[in-house]
Each structure stands twice: as C-alpha cells, then as structure tokens.
Length: 152
Image (cartoon, rainbow, N blue to C red; front, side, top):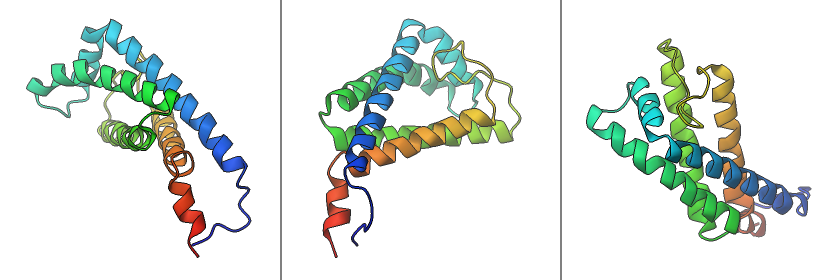
C-alpha cells in the first residue's frame, strides 16, 4: 500500500519532534519518581489494580524504565523497541486511568511523581495523545514507514 499525496518530508520531521518530546517527558517523569519513590508507591497503590506484593516493585522499576526509554528516544538507539515500549506503556497508563475514572476513584495520577493532581478525563486525553505520538515515532522515525510507502 503506497501512501499517496502524503508529504513525506513532513513525516520524518514530525516523528523526530514527537520522539524528542516523548524522551523529555519520560526523562522528567522518571526522574520525579526516582527522587520520591514512597510517594509514587502510594500513587500506584491507590489505583487498586496490582497485588500488594507488586506495588513496590513497580514503584522502583517503572521510573528507571522511563529513564531508559528517554535515553533510547532522545539518542535514537534501539528506537523501534523504545517507541514500541513507549506506546505499550501509554496504552497501559490509559487503561489504568480509564478503569479508575469509571470506578469513580479520586486519586493522584502519579504520572510525574506522587504529588500530581487528581485524575480526570483530560489526563486520559493526554495519555492517548502521547500514545499517538509514540505510534507516529514507531512508524515514521524507525523505518517502518519505509515498508508502508514502498509496497504497491
């Protein structure tokens, strides 16, 4: 399938902007959680989605994963894996937010550490937008776009 009439010079530059923005967001979010792991653990607990034994593990591992993702996205190393994992994380964040909003929980997002504001539907829109940016990066900045545009 050939993408006709698609401005090809715009796609790589848009993907680059998305990739760098995602990298900066992950770097900031991960760092905020690393410096206050107790607050982030409480935020994870408040979602009531994980067993108690997994909460501390997630609170310790997820911030470092976000920092590693930031390094991959900013540097361009392991870009396919970084952008795919970024998309999967935003999909899981959106699912957790949706479940919590539907259940009527009044909790902190935990997105940028434990002291973030209470969740609302705009947080879900933000996560879905970031998911879209991850998909744009995956397709157009990691050579997947080549396969989409070269096949007839």
